[in-house]
Image 1 (cartoon, one colour):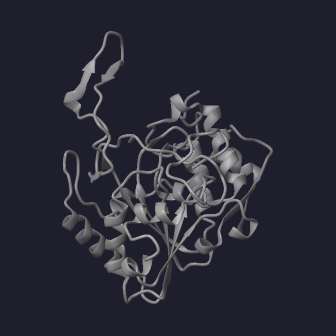
Image 2: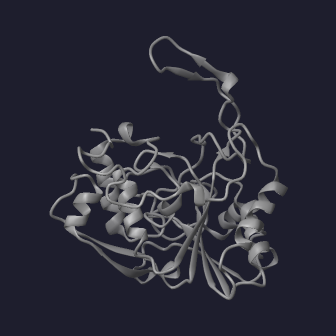
Length: 318
């Protein structure tokens, strides 16, 4: 099965595909950005946004997504300081296990137990998918619309849409996170940090089922609006807050450079020469890659004592 729209159907599966010309961009193919360039870009972009005296919710990835998040967070903090009413940072765990204070501190770049010293005025919380009170209802996507969004893969069912109440109750929700090829959506990033990042189980289950029907081999790396992306984008229109996104592509040193790729016999076969893992990543706004990263796949609160994340299980999603 492919992700192409059926005959006569629009390629965006009945959704607005967006206008990329509206986005502010820095960098490009083959370019690597310095910290100063990143900070200046963030400051410039957020200065033009309508954020004064607003309640802002930042939705950021958990430890399964690799990017220089401390640099981005410090840049955003500097750009918002003195302008907004309040800032809540929600870690988009999906159904992953919550991050402990030590893990959060390393992930976001502050000293454990001293978040106020680095991000004064900010509240930082895990998305607690295991607690019913985490969510606010947004509405429902009815069966007829769902059939259109999925290109006919789903029929005669509807789905309730819930989201973390901090997102629903904010004036502006800002996604900050990387974009990678993704086996369920095509490419990650953007609205995917809302659904399934901070969403209720209903849409998580449905979106992954649609992706499974298409198959990961057909889906991963597909550009544009796939059926799962259409479903996610439709759900995002129900969020009452204004939505902004700071999306980035990272080049991870734990992946081998092009010179380390050696072609093997047979079609499309590549051998990756090993390269030591590194905890750092550099910003590059082109050329997505999968990074070697630990995974958190057990739903529930943070472990009381842990030095590493648990390995994957099929029960969690983001």
